Length: 348
Image (cartoon, rainbow, N blue to C red; front, side, top):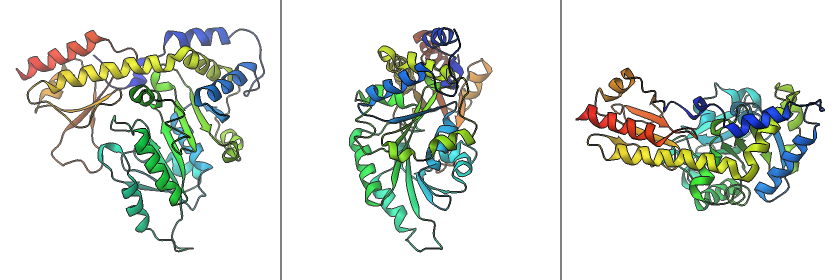
């Protein structure tokens, strides 16, 4: 049974059907086709306001390119110490921004707080030209710890950013899972809370290569179209990204897929929690479960063919051996229950 990553799950049938339909005929390239314009309008409907939308192929490019227009090369981007931009993008944000400094901040359950932001900024007083000026705040929703910010938490953090004159970026690789978990509107969780730019991910939730950078104020996009082109992410056959988002946003497919993945993770977390000797590290708000097994159990599960990853992040206790298990839109109850029973049998 595979709980390695939602990236392993392949594509949803509806996405594949949309790609097949988009393959017919000859249409303008580079986003000049009618389908791309239609999907851009769909984003405006989903977020309840006019917005500038740019499609790219990867989440790393989406984050790096978004930040590239939110900070100068000599600026600083505040982020959580466990965030994807800090831990998992091979200095991509630094590359795309031309050298801007990422300033990692600790926070419980993968989340930042207004107090942590204020404390961090006090340690970097304004002293030009020696100190890099703080330019932006990057949030992750849902977080790398499988938790979500409530709307109230998001609003408070964004207000703190505003007071410090920081623009706010949201890494939404699992944005769909967060929206499904909270049951709020996408607008409430983004621009209404104070988010300026969202990287809206589809790849982890049933798409093949579909990420969107959404600017809730068109003026903030500035020269983004040139940055995207320069980075090699202006797809000539843009219709194939657009087709994925067309199906993804149709009739709430994106939320249906995410809700299923979340439900499977909740089932997995509940089952593992009931096994003596097994403990959960973080609350399970979306489709990720972080767990500690008794010594030797994880190794035996892997030897039996189950796939999941060890999980080590900054600030972890030296003796904690954590593991991450991820459910996807394809995860079944039978897989979840089978893994739980196998774990229970190994522990005895």
